[in-house]
Image (cartoon, rainbow, N blue to C red; front, side, top):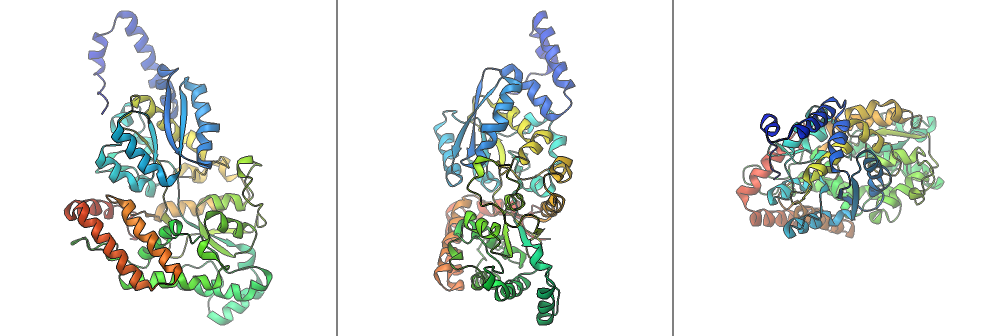
Length: 488
């Protein structure tokens, strides 16, 4: 922990007259700063010439601090930023390894919120409340959209990270297909309800199969999803809870994923592949994106970047050369996935490493990054993959002007920010998630859903026993009490 600052009156008594004058001027500048971002900049200027390191997801995500925020921060404060790129799958391990080594190589961190209980219990994250109050950030934190603020910021009532990425699943659909008069007439005649974005998974199955039957000859499928296990894991967590499932018996901590609800969800997930493109079981993020942008699927579910890229908002960025040119710009609609409670899949929060030797300036950098004005600019970057997460982002004139349907896109993200479901977060969360991923792989291989879930529940129970039932029960109770744990 950082040493607490001396009370102002006591600090003044330790200064020379010249030092007093200098300190008063500095304090006045900080107090007079208009925004939380300005206050962070003013306070960081005394660290000019220093270099801080921040861990960031490798790939497009890291272009934010490398091309935009890092250089701007250095220009404003004189503090340099060194970005350490780490693949997402390795970030938790790297952070823990560095914490145990205690070398102070990391100053600021990007962490997936589901990791926080593990990292906090280990002691790897610095508690931020003292800094938040010292630099006047608490009021602005309240302006983060409620689902992210209430679920991704605190552990045991204390702040350990700033929610910084509005990751959430959104349904994207072809407006032109759903508005087709002939399709609407035929669908209404067959199912006795209107052809529209599905609000239940039963409707999704009926609509997806119907559209494939009607459009497959034109090379269009009713739907396509990413089905690789790491992605399908999040979709299982979402659907299981929307259908009424609970992960554990809260009294005994016995896993309940193998309930009839779990079997229903896995069975339906596999059955839906029948009206999706051949080989969909192996679709990852990019495969599914390409299918949708080329106009080959009428519906899909993914993170917010799909919506921007489908609209053609790429700004000719070389970093996005791999994204297929959208053939459906202006034809894309946005909706919540069936069930109305989308998964806040992964996401990122900004934290400070407990082993950092430069905690205050590392904190100031993440306060500035997360501040209202800077975070908006970062979410508008076409290459950053940072998604809107503050209430002000959803109504920002600059964002609303990015493409004609941006207002509908942002309205849907706002809805999702109010009803989203938090990823399961426990001690050794990665072990529970690995069991889900293994189960998904077995599902696509043709194994029986009930047998898959029985094995998954057995693996979960073994992890719980290893962690300690009472210990894990307390963590689960804290997680389950959050607004985004289960649908209300």
